[in-house]
Length: 394
Image 1 (cartoon, rainbow, N blue to C red):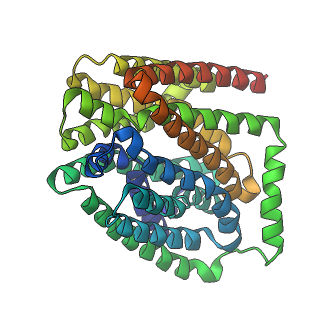
Image 2: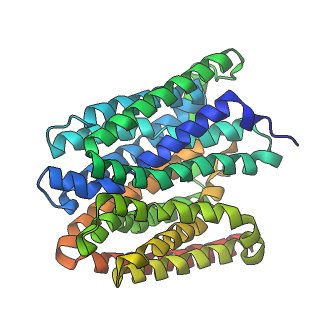
């Protein structure tokens, strides 16, 4: 079956949105040391900005899921991108760390809609036979943003400062928002929207229906701890590398881009590996890669060893995470935006809790202990989930 959707204006607009969403998710990994220095504080204290963004990103998944199902996913994505752009612009003028955290919270409110609703829209618009390939193309743009975000952010922070980075982000968000808004207007006449009242009632009831399934609760709990253990440690990788090896912001950002490169490499081999390993083996192998990556990061002998570790980290994370993401798409086929909202909410609430917890631990234990603990916990979590997969398949 031929995939005509990927050549459409709507898909290209969503691809641009996925790119800037990916860059926005990871760009602060490289900016954190720069922001901390500008406000004369430590990276652990400045991480409140990361926590604010991820808190809003996770919380507002619950809002956008049913709203997107009811009034149209493209319209919600467009407005959300414009909100994220406005917040990024104001962030560039923040006079204090607290003000920056507030604006990043608002930016997270906007950014929260973009990728989950894009996935849901493609799920609605494509037949099952070509859906996986179409979603893979969109994920590729997200990963490209995650690769380039830290690298470009580090370069710009080195040449200019972090405030200019947010101004560039604001311009891109605004452009993307207008593109998607145009596509939403074109498709509005043929959109299949729920009737007033009925959609609202049914979509919110879907949350209860989804959560009654024990298997769904397993996915949600595992995604929460995956987000907490992985991103709670990884958010400080840039600060660790810069402080330990006295690297430039540009080099730090380039090294962190290895995470996105590893994830992109994963997309090239996922089908082949899945045939060889199966879902359960896939999750277990991902846990092993993450264990080795974080343990080696904790005892890193030289900065030159960091790039391959970042690549391995991205590769291992997506081996684990993609299985969870695939299961999440099956949770509510009749209200896909709502189902993916539950999954994303859990993941980013875990990330928020993890970043906050690691920020409190690092001053007392140091970076290596946090990285080592994250590797061990992710490995154990992968084992638990692999066993649940086996029990589910029996």
